[in-house]
Length: 308
Image (cartoon, rainbow, N blue to C red; front, side):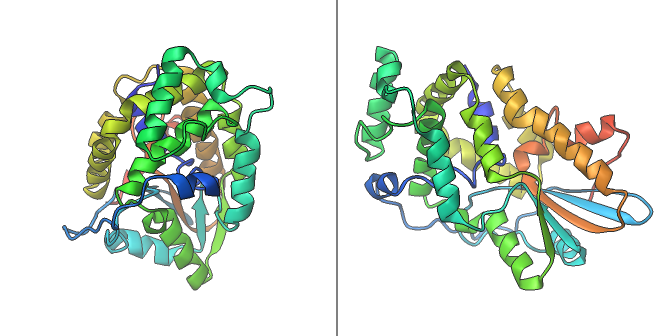
């Protein structure tokens, strides 16, 4: 089974902004959202790296896709790097939520004439139904969907109920700043491609993922709070430790994390041939631990250095 650390890594990877776009019916039926969480502690100092040559500088910021309110992260070296950039690079763009939601549903829906609960074992079905009821949803809420879809949406419900919100996430805020400043934007991937990676996973991996999400729902808030704390403190090593221990589904990790990190590192190395300043904001899970973007850059002969 996929470890809970792998599950948390996926929440810090590119997909988190996408799977917040659950079908309206689920959003309406889910348990009420708590009052927004707010942060009043010391300002965040997330880890920031850079790669550079004589006429190009590329900054790398690991992001958190959903945060409580009032997390002060846009300051110091991060603010300076962004304001110096002439290009913002993100994992994908979220310009059309309605269109994105439709792509998400189209790829998540079943086409085999069976319901999700019909293809699960008796124990898996019982666990899913219990999780749905506890989340304020009907037992049949995910009947028409694939296991990966059910797992992704379920994993966000307790966080949204705890007051975490996409509008407070780094991507949402930084894209708004880019729109205001007029900085050019470039997505590394399309939403269709990202969602297709999940949809193309073997059913065994999908079911393992769903089972893991259900198993970890009771502690998910606490787990994510630990990750957010490490991210705010810029503790990249601690973040890597929390994410990397006991990862066991190598197929899922390869498709969703490792292969994409390799592709992004290749793009970054190529981009060094063009002069300018680039600000790259990708999920913190891609910039921590073994097989990170920095690791792949190092293999290609590109050295990264810590800025903050």
